[in-house]
Amino acid sequence: MKNFIHTIQELKTFLLLWITQSFSGLGSAMTSYALVIWSYSQRRSALMTALLMVSSYAPYVLLSIFAGALSDKWNKKLTMLVCDSIAALTTIVMLLLLRNGDLQIWHLYVINGINGLMNTVQQPASEVAVTRVLPKKYYQRVGGLKYFSSSLNSVMTPVIATAVLGIAGMEMVVAFDLFTFAAAFLVLAFKIRIPESNGQAEAQETLLVSAKKGIHYLKKEQGIFHLILFLSAINLVASIYDAAFPAMMLSRNGGSEKVLGLVNAVIGITTFSGSILASFMKAPKSRVRVICNCLLFSMSTENFLLAFGRTPFVWCLGGFLVDQLFEPIMAVQEKGSLLVKMFGSGKGSGAAFLFFVIAFAGIGVFLYFRRDRYIWGLEGER
Picture 1 (cartoon, rainbow, N blue to C red):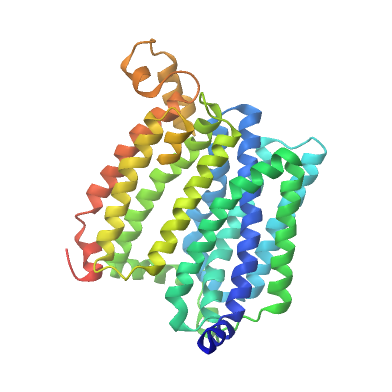
Picture 2 (picture 1 turned 45 degrees about the vertical axis):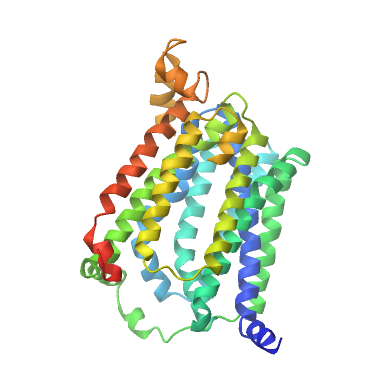
């Protein structure tokens, strides 16, 4: 008990930061989830829904190489507070537009782009802040806690958002988001002190020099660079999946907002279970092997199950391309054709066809990088 109390005391600042930021993350995730449903109900277009994600992630893809350098130069706590405040301001603007009946899809693209930019700058500052308030001996345990909160939010987001959306409407979802922001902002501003480093060396460097140093480091550390390429390729496939997933769940026979919430909740539960399992398991002898095998299993099962599944039960087990390629292909198929037998017919069958294709794309990425000697060199084996 003494050890437990001592541990809590050492982790007090981190726990306060983690709990409040996770709470705020839940509110933001609920708003994002509700907006996906709202946007699809407006146009019933997977492309429109996918562009919400593109507008969020584009700033990260384009500017992430400079975000770390900026984070090194700026005060971490102030950076987090400013980024959160700007994101909250865009949410208030969206709420006002919604209440006046003036909210349009393009408004959401602009808002998501601004929020994506703020997240791009805030993320490295937040990660550094955690290391500043946390003793090194707790780094591994804290990694488990971060996955825990992320998984828990994945479980709770569709359940709570669907319930609030159905009972009180979109405005209440956004109001909850603003409430969670206010709680996290006040705690960070007045209850948490984040030590700052001297920062003289970083302040003397220009932004381009700092970015060039990062690029030079990656050129030198080929293993890390190739691992980043591997995970980026997997994330590209996963992004296509994320873009098509809501369209399929909302439009296919047997699908609905409730089914979308159910499947997302199941995904969150399994992620939550996996994070707990990983926290209690011993460190694997080969981390690279575990990463590769888990990704292969994932790509070989979930996308095929979603492609061939016709009921919420099977879906629980397991953008542009949907609207402009796969849906039109399925629309011209005759009733007894092979593709109709495999993926069904009507709205949503094109998304199922896409899942079938990206399953092979994911497996191909895995097989290519599975033999990468630079990645295996990270742990001294091939």
